[in-house]
Length: 453
DNA sequence: AGCACA
Image (cartoon, rainbow, N blue to C red; front, side):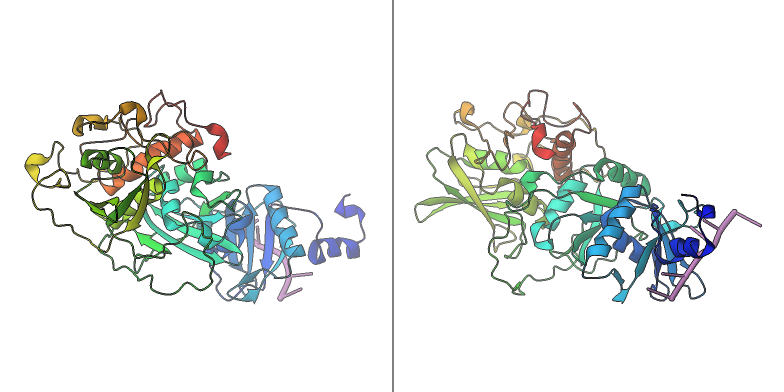
């Protein structure tokens, strides 16, 4: 129906009271004083991709227009708040939202909030903050570029993260690749069925991370103080997923307990397994209570956390043998008294086959992955029984051990960055973005597409 | 608290 055909009274109602004409542009009013584009992105990002924002207009400078990429995204935001008991709020102040009577924002060249920047704001749908650890976020978003910083926060019922990249080109690539996609199931706790990512640009250019914590990380500054995890995190919800919040202080040294040790696990085996996630500096093995334990030292906590995340609960040998149980050690620097079959210091130059870690020279997504086997003495165990995950539901068909098939990016040595690139290559192939270009070689028909939606 | 933007 044409507006011109209506009486002016009805037309006015449609325009200004309860405009039924859906638009991908929403008109927001009663915003707080000097509301920022960032605040509007936070509010609207859960519902869709924001393409333009115009805020601080109107007589009171308390109105804004937000344009979504898709009409149905604007509709989803409208219908959400139409049926929600909680109104939309910014800084605690109720915001009134309607469809704009315009179908798009015409003059958008001043709209910084939706212009490509180096920081993304990510809404993780259908999860609580306890469902997804910062390590998971880091792994997922490292797939396309070096992640500098992450800050997570809860906004209303949503879990959101600000993720900082080197530049807007990389951020843009990440946004294109991951927006609307799901976090792989194997990175989610059992009770979470799916977690879609909703990504827009943040107006931030440099996140101010005060300390490393379960909520925020600055990967460019490993010396940043760690905020203790000593606070009892309330509820007796022990059913946190396997990758949920850490309850134990993190450490760069992992303590591995090897359960059901039917087969010999040598220090070389341990070295090979743990090297897949970063440079292993030292290993000390010892027996205690009739069980074999190993302390594995990495250069930094991030690498250890990554290794822990991927290896926990997995078996060294096929058939459920030699299952790894990992925790953070209280140690941060192991003392190794000379080489033996139970302890080794890989930082002593003459024992090392590989060169010193190269300085980070930027992200190289398609860097050729050299086989790691050259640097590792294959231990004397049956190679037909090499490591696969204990639980195929956790990590289907993915070999952990670079014995013959999957080539891990062993560019001499690992830094935490190249550890990230390891997962990058995995995730890229998992997401099917770079077919054939990723780490695990073609033999890995074990990349199960259906698992990742 | 009610529609802007060369």
